[in-house]
Structures are given as structure tokens and as C-alpha cells.
Image 1 (cartoon, helix red, strand yellow):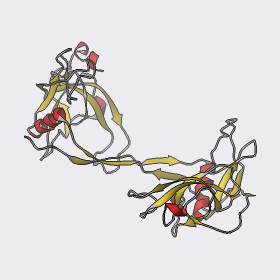
Image 2 (cartoon, rainbow, N blue to C red; image 1 turned 60 degrees about the horizontal axis):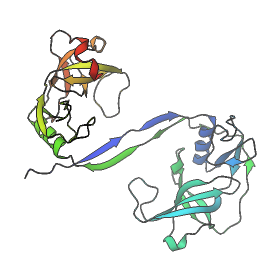
Image 3 (cartoon, one colour; image 1 turned 120 degrees about the vertical axis):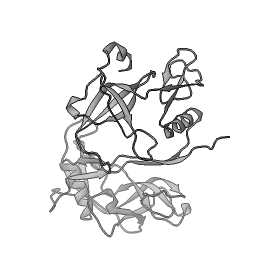
Image 4 (tube, rainbow, N blue to C red; image 1 turned 90 degrees about the vertical axis):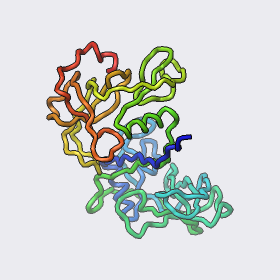
Length: 313
């Protein structure tokens, strides 16, 4: 019995965004240990603030400072924190309505156990020792027995305001391919491309999926495709990706391998980016011990006729 393939996989996309005047004031305020909300046309104070009234859709910029104390409106216990969460010991996720606010903020509550948490309990902000202008400037909340705070108008003006943030999006998991993709990956190790043919419609899928997405029947007949193929459509990438050592601009394309009925993704190299075109005939380039082609390059053949690949666009 062949070994079961398994490998860790990380899907990560750090999203960089600019901030408008309201979000900029809110995050800069956190850096300065100040919590700001925004007042709607009906007089409600929203924390975290938004830039448009959720009822009237009118732009709102009337900033108000609320207290760093508040009341838990609901909660859930987290017995096993994951990497990157606010605390590395068990804690409670809480919605807390800060004094002076009319909406609740989601954050973490440091508590010894679920028995110490209840709806209606009073809490206060525990500020992070180092603050940069992010929601993590609130390290967590902690129980509080003092008086309720009040709200007050605020100009939203600070020295050296925060104008942009990077929001990390990351998914870590272990991937185990099934029968069809295991055969596909094993063939790539030998610099071959193997797909599977549908017994009903006779289409060949590369990479194989184990079943035909059109007919819904299992696929078991293996078919070797390529290695050459045709560029069906493409885009020019002008923004350099983090941790990717490829100079921009470069071309990423759909390549329909000879004998396949499904185009796959691939980078096109060995040709100036502005000379890549639909119908360009290409072949794979393998480097080192790589288990998949590094990129595809032109074969020098005449371009494929449009009618030969139009169904794969």
C-alpha cells in the first residue's frame, strides 16, 4: 500500500489598507490610551466607529471619547487559545459595551475560569505595554469594580496619526490529498503530468479531482497530458508579492495542456511580459528538485488556432 501523502499548508494574505479620518482617529486614539466612538444622526454612539450611519447611510464624523470601562453583554469561554489570539492562557471572548457607548466591542477577558465570568459583569481595559495604533493596543479586559465612566466630545486630532494598517489573514492546516491527487503529485516527481478521464463525457481533468465536476461520476482512468500546452488567457502582475523572489512585471496565465480539458495556472517566463499572448505555445521548465514546473516558456511553435482552445477560456 503506498504511503499516504500529508504536508503542512499555509495560506496567507497580509492585507494592507489605508484609513479614513474616522478609523485613523480610532486607532491613533488606542495608541494614546483613548477610546473613540462616533455619534450617529440619531445620537447613538458606535464603538468601534464606522464612517457611515448604518441607518441613514449618511457620512458621520462626530467623534466622542468613551470610558475604558464597561459591561459584558455576552461571552464565550475559550479553553484552548490558538497562536495569535490575544492571550496564551484560557480566556473569555466577550462583547463589552463601554460606558458611554451604545454598541458592543469584541475582545478578550482575562479571567481565572468560566465561573468567574457572567453577563452584566463590570470590566475595564488593560492596555498593552507597547502600543502602535492597532486593536491589539487593548491587551485584554479585566474585572473592574469601580464607578461607570462618561463620554465627552473629542476632536479626533492627535500628533503623528496612523494612516494605514496591515491586516494579516492566515490559515494553517495539514493537507492530505486523496487517491487522484496523490497519483498526480507522484507523477510530477517524475516530471510527468497525469490527469483522469471522465467515463461519461470523456473530458480529461488536470489536476484530477477524483470525480467529474460536470457529470458527477467517479474518474479512475489515468491519462498523461502535456507536457506542452497553450496559453488561453493571462494577466500581467505589477505588484511584487511579499516573500516571492520574482521581479515584476511578470505574467501569470491559464495553460491548457495538450490532451487536457481543463486549464491550469502557471507563470510564463523566457519571454518579455508584453509579448505573451493568447494561443502562445509553451512548455514546462523544471528546476532543481522542484516537484512542479517553475514556469512555462515558449516552445517556438506557431500559435495555436483560437478554435482549439476557445472552450477552455
